Image 1 (cartoon, rainbow over the protein chains, first blue to last red):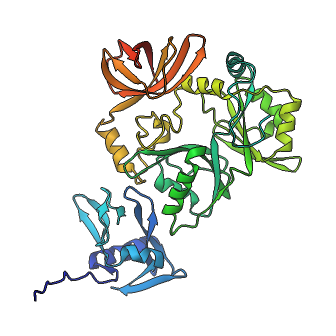
Image 2: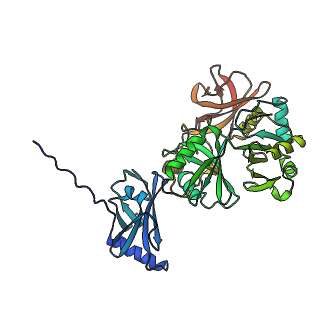
Image 3: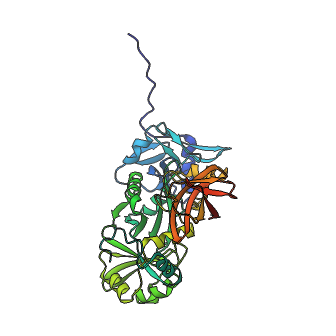
Length: 119
Length: 328
């Protein structure tokens, strides 16, 4: 009998890197909302069919799933969660541009600007 | 009198020449039976349309009208949309045949948006008041100058307890007011009748459209073509960022990769049909997408050709009829 090793599945949660968490706190502070949470969602549209949406919010909306990491509360709408499970939110300040980066294992295609993806 | 709000009106009322003359020199009414229309309400309506079509419309103000193109993820045309912002809801005009496809596509992308769609095609009708004297005549139809919208704006008014929406679009490059009313409309029908404004048939409208180089759904607008080829530059924002099909449309424009262009044609022999091949010195360069007889032995049409083709000697169809071309 032969056995094949299964590729480990990404965790079905959403994580945030230390760099991204620091930038969320910085943006919240600059926006005059130092205690704000982050809402991470997906909407239809954009180059690849689905678009990431980030918002500073005061709390969760009805049906949001909340994840707390590195001092940041992430609120994710249930309908978006299926597209975001396993995603690691990072922040890039490299030569290709500054901004939040979604490392999303569900994304089969992404657009050049990084805000849109397809599954 | 047409008894349905979606059935085809006659090709002409008096004669094609007379209809065309009335349209271009006076004022006339046409039934807007080729339009599909629906409402979009909900707080995300404009934002959603902005994410799935070519024009920057998320900043469209109340009573403003804009034109946008819904494209596939490959940047091909689904349909050309007229978007009217009435504040609490949007009114969308599509081609009648494309309405279901457009609504399905909007519904598909709206899974997490506050958006509601309502098809109002069967319960409404559209009259188009067209012609150079339309801006004067519309004042009498609407009873008050303050009811008349400026170009690319809309007004929502009530006459005799009937809600009416008037939009000025000039879509065939002559003054045009589109009047949306409930179906059947006692007010608009009786006003047109009492003011004796003549009706025009579909052929004169087609002549006007082709002369203006305006692409139509099913002929120049389909998934075979992209909005740049169709010459819809005024309905595309190259700065707005992501929308479905944006990367393809932006790449075609940035790297000048557009292969075809829409041109106007005229010729004087009968027998040319939609789909006939366009030749440049015996080399196939494109095909006729629309054609109509303007008057005896004078025909006009639209066609897509390969860009930068030699247009010195153009022939069309099996009989290689000589034609002249005009850029749009």
